[in-house]
Amino acid sequence: MHLKHLFDLPPSPGNPRNSEGAFLALRDGSILFVYSHFSGSVQDDAAAELWALTLDGDAASRPAPLIPVPDDGAQNLMSVSLLRMVNGDIGLFYLRRHGQTSLEMVLRRSGDEGKTWSSPTPVTARAGYFVVNNDRVCRLTGGSILVPAAEHKKFLRADGSVYFDPRAEAVFFRSDDDGQSFYELPGKGVMPYADACGSGLQEPGVLELRDGRLWSWARTDLGSQWEMFSFTGGRSWTPPAPSRFTSPLSPMSVRRLSDGALLALYNPVPLYNGRSAYARGIWTGGRTPLALRLSQDDGQTWNDPVLLESDPFRGYCYTAIFEEAPGRLLLAYCAGGAGDGSCLARLRLARLFLGEDAAQA
Image (cartoon, rainbow, N blue to C red; front, side, top):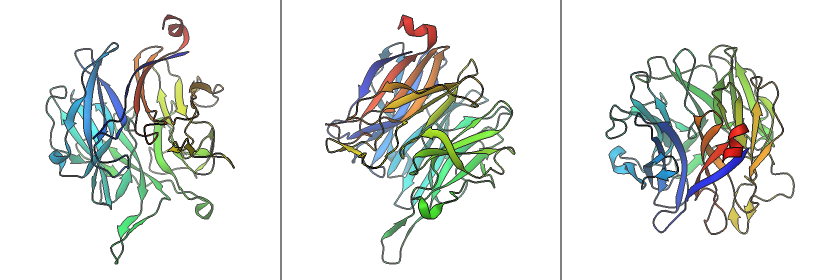
């Protein structure tokens, strides 16, 4: 196993943060990469729009705006997922923020490989504050599209201040007509120990197992990712419980590879007593090291964690995963550290070689 850094997108004057991207193969053989380009500050609610570049081997085009904020009339666009639609369109899923209490996911489509885009249509099917991570939207075996979201209660008080509840509930939106419309599934995940947990179930992911079950996981502040399962396509879920993946309050990414194996990328060291979320004065969330685990039996067992990045003064999170070929993956993840202002400020692109391909890297 070998990780090769390709390049970073560091912060710069007027661009304090680059983060949360996703990949998609284009018909000409190149790879589209879309990410969040911030121009306000490193905060999640700062001004940001969607930028893109294309990759051809190790060569990359110059990043350029894809969806500017004025096109949506929003203060902030971020957290991209990309999906090839059944009719061949590119589906561009992303969050857009209106004010302090509205965060929604929308979908744009492109029939000309990203040159032009349709108007946005809603994915989160009602008003609210929904967090959907980058590279999270998935297609099920039967063709339906499933979107995992963390719903937070957030509203304006009578005195004009904003109430925000960090204790999220995991909810799911589904489309059975290839993204033409979405509806909310009745099943959701709620932390059973709300008084002992300040996070609830944040930033959930979802994956379909071979036997048709859905597996969902979410970050928590209880020292591990929590998980739940659905036998009904997301219409109901088992009670959430701690998984085998120890973790700080940091997202985990899981992808099924072409050989059937499951690959998980996460931060395996929780914020135990005495461990700081800061390093050299920079917030990292304790999101180091970045580790990989593989399962050959659909998640029943996993190998021991393999460290890909381990700088104690950086934080690694919000990973996008794209399989270029068997044994060869493209990764993109936040990798900020000292001098960047936050672990979220710097975006890193890398190529991961598994198995026999690692010797050729």
